[in-house]
Length: 335
Image 1 (tube, rainbow, N blue to C red):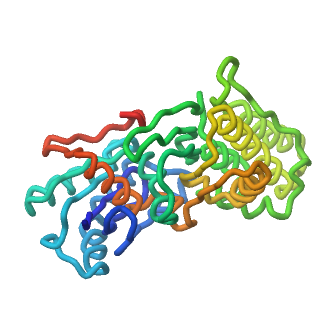
Image 2 (image 1 turned 180 degrees about the vertical axis):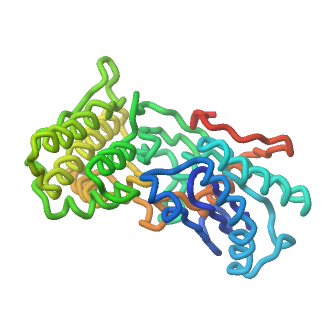
């Protein structure tokens, strides 16, 4: 079964063709990093306009690379939630038009479910049930993947997401956008114990995260040093920040795995590309005889291949979207 998938939830215009949920026939991503870099973050209006400019070209390229036409497809899958509403609408409306014009079934796909599915493309042997840590610029979740389309959230951030902390602290220190990538690279040459940053917790919530206090502490550290005319060694700051975030993520994730008897774990989302997170989790899982699955680096960020993978399983489960499908800025992964 061949599915054309479309992803426009934030600042990447992406299209891919995926076979049977596991094989990537093509994957095209048009990044907008250069367009938003000058602003230090994603500007929603600019993002949606760039999607309009790129969507036709990206889809045509994906089909050409897969050596297919619309007539060879079995369905079209599209990210419809959550994300930037203007960006989502570009992909959703294009997908609806293409599905109608070519008499193809339309499948609506949740963005976070897609991130989990990136692991299905990397690991052909991975099947539910398993426990997944989703970490990105806008989300930090611990999710029980009971089946391909049945999920249960047992932990999530109560305020900021892990990726947001990386980006905002990086911007406060004057690092280019996207900040998380630069923090990770610079941290390799720093001392993770140089600054004692907090590990916030949520009272009464064993597996929930809270990153706002950590973000505030790191930003205040930067501002206070600037006001005093002092220099902070950027390598040490990045290493300490990275270590604190990874410590928060892994401790809760591993506790959730132990308490809920999961021996099979996975990570996904943009922050799953973080080198320290990958290394630390791998080491801890080996110590505790846990099997860890991680998506290949090219599938950690937003892409359409993961949408095609999850779209296949949504299709197999009998889910179809009508032509009145709308986008949604927020939506639970359980819906």
